[in-house]
Image (cartoon, rainbow, N blue to C red; front, side, top):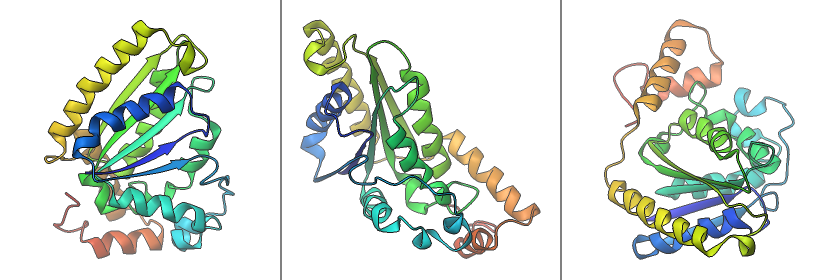
Length: 232
């Protein structure tokens, strides 16, 4: 199993350490792990030029930064997205990263490879906000067409990993072991969720009934999705 991990900050705190626990548990079945740290590996904000929608993602002014991550995600069987909670949401770096992938949202040009992939979304906070933070990422993954997404959020009652109590760390390790087992059990039988399929059929309806962007319409026609083919 190949894994691509994207971290919403370069700070190696609780979220990073929990991500590493997952990687360790999944290691026996993992052949390759590729990690990206934001903003180091993708420092740019989307400038809103719309070129990725109109002319294709290769015309994005930040394509040289986006493409290595895009390619690693395409090759991966499991994608891990980790973000500490910043004011009840993902880090600004993670949001900026997700903004750059609007071109592959369902109504535009979803990548067929996503429908057979799994994703794991991880967030931590000293207190609260994990649910809304995870949702920020899960929303994008659903609109990308990712087949199965797991989430893990944990209140650690500390601003750093060193300050997390041993009792909490033991509970986290148990949680990681259980969720890792579910991921491994699912890895050879990934099918799009009902949510993902519903988004696909709604986008398909729009392309059949409404004049969409020419680049997107051409893409859907080329895939055969407006007829009988499906991406799963």
